[in-house]
Image 1: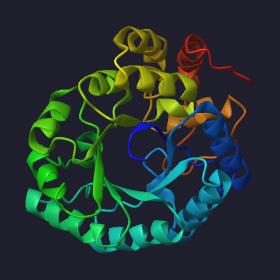
Image 2: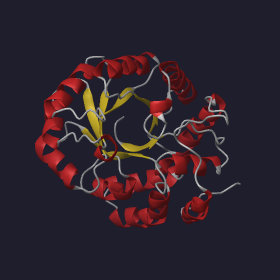
Image 3: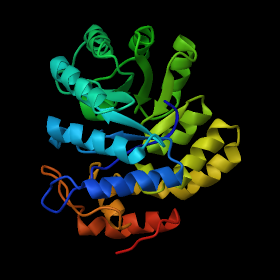
Image 4: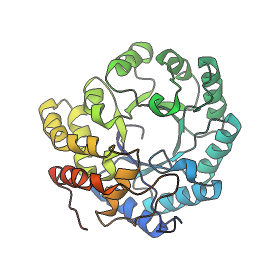
Length: 293
């Protein structure tokens, strides 16, 4: 459940910014057919800071219903308030998610002990918890030694590690062995993470090229580095192009131009600037992704 190719799904919206549940159903089908192993609803790529509690519940319930047991649904429930994170985790639990993805508290810079107690409390909700460490966005780094302590907490099942490179995965294995699932949160170095002993990734690129990302994951996990390298070569352009502006601006534009969603996005995020169109289109073409607009 907590390995393989997992997509950090965009949240489809109408042009006025309201949720587009019909498009959400299309996206779920798209990923079931492409072999994606799990879907994260309302993560960073899903514009979680701009969703209300009611919208979070609606999205998770709709995704679970559309999945119909064919693909795992994980709900994003992080906050920089422990009380709020507990509330959100209860919401995704009650909406039927199989697990919660919980980002480290951002902006207020807790200590390592504060992080441990934060996650320990959330694990008590009774839903499997995937830790999410992305210091580049949060100004907070969940260190491997703290992760090792959390690996002993009932309900903590995996970590999404968005520190680029392979040093962390090696350190995690030294400290914890196989007690937690190790998921890369950095598309550009995900292949190296897997070849170093990771279990999978939670990916932005998988929104656009899910079959290739699933194939890359399978090859890297099953001892086929040459195949993994060949697939990653086709994906490298997307890994770069989907971050020419802050995520999820470029990926929503790409998925819209695949004909899967409308153009809706919520402030303070804006539409992709036209000067980046050619770069994203070229990366899509290199990965064999059909551009329909």
